[in-house]
Structures are given as C-alpha cells and as structure tokens.
Length: 357
Image (cartoon, rainbow, N blue to C red; front, top):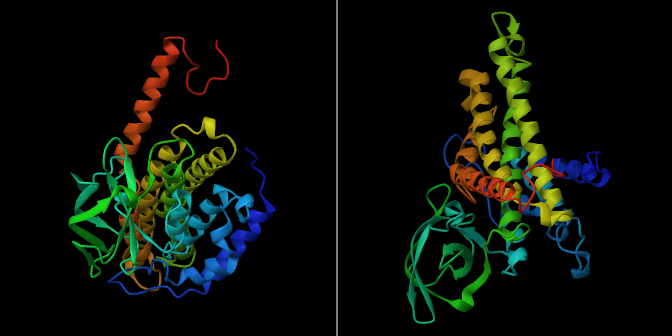
C-alpha cells in the first residue's frame, strides 16, 4: 500500500470540500439534520464532479478510480455533515440495481433480519419495519434474509402493504405482507471479500469517519477561540487531552478504512475481515469522538452556531447501518479464531505472519 499522497485524490478532496461548502446546512436543533436521497442538495455537487463514474470500471465507460475514490466521497460528505446521496447509487451499481433507488433495512445486517420473509408461491411476503435513506424515492432496495444469506430486493413505493413514515428521522418504511418475487432480487449481500456488501461497509465506514473528523474539527476550532477564566480552552488539560486522544482515534480509523479500500481494489484475496473491522471501528470512533467534542465545547455544543448537534444525530443514526458494531466485532473475532485454529493444525499461516517460524 502506497502511503504517499495521491495528487488526484488531493484535487478531488479539495473539489468536494469547495462544492459541499456551498450546500446549505440545516441548522435547526430539531427535525432531520440533513437532506438525503437522490434529490438531496449534495446531488448537484456529486453530479458536477461526475461521482457516478468514479468507481465504474473504465471498460464500462467509467473512470476506474476504484473504491478508494468512493471512500473519499463518503468521508467528505460526513465531514461536512451533509446527506449521503452517494451510497445508494454506488450500491445499486454494484449489484446491477436501478439508479435513483433508496436503500432500506441495512441497519439489520449482517443477519438481514430487519424484515421477515414468509415463503409464498414464486417469492415471499415481507413484513416488518426498517429505516430508509430517502422517504421520497420511487423504489426501495430492501435488505432481507430469505435463506442462507441476505439479498437486496427492489420494492416499488406503491407496492401493496408498503407505508412510508416520513415524519421521523431517519424515515422508516413499514411492510405488511408485501409480495415480492424472485425476479425482484437484484443482488446478494454475501460476505465475499470484494463483494457489494464489503464495498458498502467501507463506504459507510468512511462516512462515519468523516462525521468524527468534522465534529473534532469544530471542537478544536472552538477550543482555540473560547476562553475560560482568561485561558483558552485548548490550553486546559481537561479539554486538550481528550481532543488529542480523539485525533489519534480519527487517524487510526482513517488508516483502517483506506487500507480496507486499497485491499478491495488491489488485493481482494487478502481482504478478509478488513471491511467489517473498519466499519465497527468507525462506528465506535464516530460516537466517541462526537461525544468528546461536545463535552469539550460545554453548553455551546448544541447551539446552531457550532452545529455539533447535527454530527451527534448523524452519528447516532448512522453507526448501526450495515451491521451492529458488536456483531461485527464478533464476526472478526470468530474469523480470527478459525484462522488461528487452522494455523495450529498446520493448514495455513497465523494471522499477520509471512512465513512459518
């Protein structure tokens, strides 16, 4: 993995930050902190940069920048505390689904148990309640377990038994015996090292990383201006030390996320549990760093001027998507245990080893 800065990535990051700076932020202390979905305000920025072609292979008319570019887009969206209008189209492109659809039920992964799928002639009946990215979308790509592994099913908004609750945030979709057929399945969400689910988890990890980085940036800026008893907040150990620890956590998480993306792009055979670990780590980092940032800013943390309330609500809503962190860590631990047992039996190298001792 090349750790030197990529000039193209630097230019792309600058362009994203410049474009997202012009997107109005929702400063209200109540209601949805962002506008998400295909018609959200960030869509114009992504379309102007041609983000839809970043991950598409060159042979298919794309730019062939790989998952690393998609991860960078997600991080900058989170850093700006804006809606993530990128992940749905990127997931749809990965599985060959319809563009402009909204993702639903991804918070129940990896088991895909947000909905129950009762077998019926030629398909299933979906029942349950899941969150959706965009309440106004015409089609939902719903994650549901129908057997051995979860799948993405395309469900029209006007299908029988579908009801959208747009008054809550995140919005929710309720399914009551909604019929779907095998032809509605647009892709599987297996645990293949470089499959659609692994890629989606890394994009989500990057979005959470950006949320943590953005909140930390706001807190550091405020601590460098606000004085308490004649002393800058950043000069008080009770403020500066937690912010320093938060910075270390953000940098460590960034290394894990971009390493996972690099493995998917360049060494898919060595990916292993890197996407799962990166997502679990990013979810914990986002919650912890946002909390520490709010504590550092004191009573001003929830004011519209600082906007940390948006990062707080984003971290709370986004940390459980694409898999509960505790379940993800259990997955990582179980895989490492299996690897260690196979190594002990002489069938493969121990984790992290390059040669037998």
